[in-house]
Amino acid sequence: MTAKALLDREPDPSPERIKEAMSGNLCRCTGYQQIVESVESAARQLREAGQKVGAPARLERRTGS
Image (cartoon, rainbow, N blue to C red; front, side):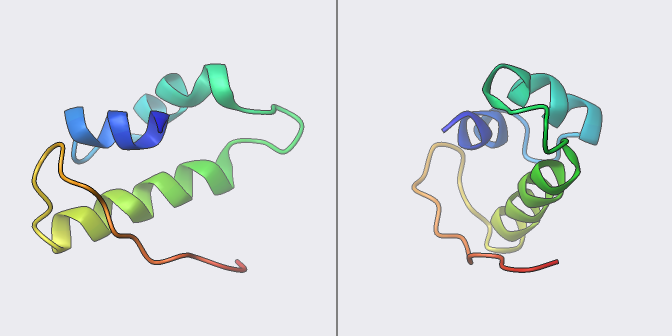
């Protein structure tokens, strides 16, 4: 929900902005890199699909690395 709210406000956030927005919701034991990459991927998919701000998102599930 936090990532979707961020992407509704900022369709192309920087990695630093993603970390800032997600900081209250993350477990620091696993690090931020995969989470940042996932939010960047969601942002890219939304932009490519021409997703409107506030519209329900349909994203592909990403597995593995």
